[in-house]
Each structure stands twice: as C-alpha cells, then as structure tokens.
Amino acid sequence: ELKVEQNPLFLSMQEGKNYTIYCNYSTTSDRLYWYRQDPGKSLESLFVLLSNGAVKQEGRLMASLDTKARLSTLHITAAVHDLSATYFCASQWGGGADGLTFGKGTHLIIQP
Amino acid sequence: EAGVAQSPRYKIIEKRQSVAFWCNPISGHATLYWYQQILGQGPKLLIQFQNNGVVDDSQLPKDRFSAERLKGVDSTLKIQPAKLEDSAVYLCASQLGLNTEAFFGQGTRLTVV
Image 1 (cartoon, chains in turn green, red):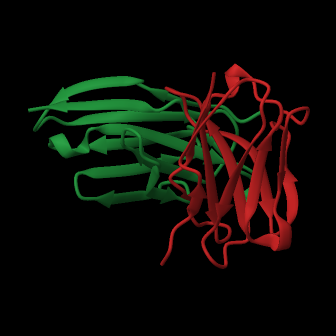
Image 2: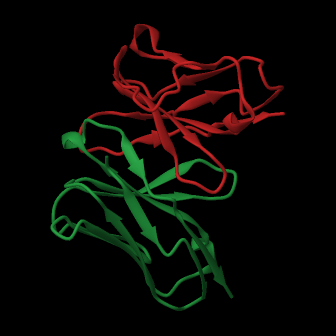
C-alpha cells in the first residue's frame, strides 16, 4: 500500500522568510504531484514531477523530487501572504496509471 | 478550456437517505476519479474509471456506494443509505493520460445529519 507523509502538517511563518515542506512516500514511484487548496475551494495543480532529480519552479515556489530517497520538497522563497493555503503532495504508482495517493496536507499561514 | 463540472455544490440529507452526485469531466479525458475528502484530511480515492470501465474500486464501500460512467463521459456517484461518517466533500477529477496532472472539480459538500 502506498503511503504518503507530509511534514510539517501546520506551518505559521512570516512574510519574507523561506521554508520547506517535505513529502515522503513509501513505495517506489517516479511521479509526484503538488496541489494547492484554498479554504472551501478545490485543488489546483502546482507541479508535476516525473523523474528523479526533477526540479520545477513557479514564482516563489520550487519543487524537487528524489526518487531514491522517496522524497519530494516544496520550497517557499520570501513568502508572501497570498501563498497562505493548504499544500498537498500526491504520489502515483503503477507507471502513472493508478490513482493519486495524497498526504494529509500542510496548512500554511503566512503572516505580515 | 472548460474544467471539471460537478453538481450539486452542496447537499444536506438525513442518515439512511440516498444521494447522488454528478460529474462531467474535461472533454477528451479518458480517466475519471472520485475522491472523498473529509475535513482536515487529504483526498482519498474511491474509484477510478478508464473510459467506461472500472480500474480501481478497492476503497469504495460497496455496500452503500456505487458509481457508474456510462458512455465513458459523465459519471454519477451514489450513496445509499448514507451514514453520518459520509459527511465530506466529494471531488471528481479527470486526467488526459499518463504523465499529466489530474484536474479537480469544485466538489460536492455533503452533510449527513
């Protein structure tokens, strides 16, 4: 059974600071997804990581994947209030043919 | 490009009643998922369709939940009879193919009282 663990589950930080969210998964997988969810809203796709060593950046967010360590990270640079949300990582087994297994999410609050 | 459409957005029912949710995926997306998201948790896969065939329904409580995807496009998820613990947001998602992200609908928030 594929398990996905995120930490921290809750993070409060100040604007301008940097921080990293970690995502560990239990079974060999080379597909890792990051989603953002605002309160009462659906999930918005942020990054799709498809190979070992993959790194993608969008604005102040950067995601990376290390399949050997079964670890993905989401790094936030110089955080701004608008990035406050819940961030989920999800892994996919079966060569991409299976459904996504999600972590519990990281609830991020960025304070002015 | 139109997104994944779901209806209704909200539903309140009493326990032991039945309820149905509808999903229209993005045009051309062969894979369709139903997820259950309980408050404060990550989405949990209930069922996965590839066109009109079921790929994975191992986590679907089949004694009360059922789903179908007629003609490989729209899908419905039904709960009969509902229990209090079924209160959650039911998310539908569709995916074009391998190596692409799944796109999620707005979800249906179900409250069972």
